[in-house]
Amino acid sequence: MPLTRRTCLALAVAPLAARATTGLVIAIDVQNPPFMYAGRDGQPRGVYPLLLRAVFARLGVPLRVICLPWTRALAGLERAEHGVGGLYATAERLARCDFSQPLHVETLKIYARRGGLRVFDRIDDLRGLRVGVLRGWSYGDAFDAAHRAGLFLAEPVASDVQNFGKLERGFLDVAVVIEQSGEALLASGEFPSVRSLPNPLTENPTFIAFNKSAQQRRLLTRVDEQLEKLRRSGEHARLVSLGLRD
Image (cartoon, rainbow, N blue to C red; front, top):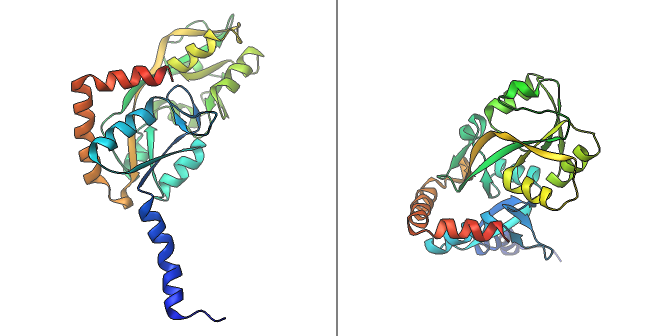
């Protein structure tokens, strides 16, 4: 049966209508506990889903938080298919995306095997080392520039657990891990040869971001207002504490 013009128009409009009913979509990393990850039921868990839902509920904006591998989340941001939560700002990203005010500030620590690197004061201390990182992640402009310059060898994997496993077996010299994530892994007792070094690599604010072509700057201004209200009321600190125990 041939398609009529009316049928063709209906088919063309259907995907747009379906997209309109889903509300705003923000992607998070599928495996970066305790900040953002998929629970056993596949649902978003951790600090950032709690903060995102609180902010957009106050705005009255329907929100769908989805968990994706970080590289897919970033690819979707590049194509303006969704926003991303928990993103670090870099010069390259700031040129292509609009950012909220900080959601939270993460402290990145250096973890090493006992008997390995003893002191970390600056990025140059990583010279010549095998450094475990997460695939698709930026660790700030200075770290990324040192990596591109060949100061150290970055070995990307999908999760912090994998990096700690490689450290334990001697396949890495150090790994870069968010402090709360690293301390939770150490507390598990599964990595007795791994320890954290005292000085942080950096403290990185995290943000909500949309591709500039999505034209969400006005929405982000409203998001910033709600984030400030959450902080002033103490609700932001409560949600972060709750998410860290999620």
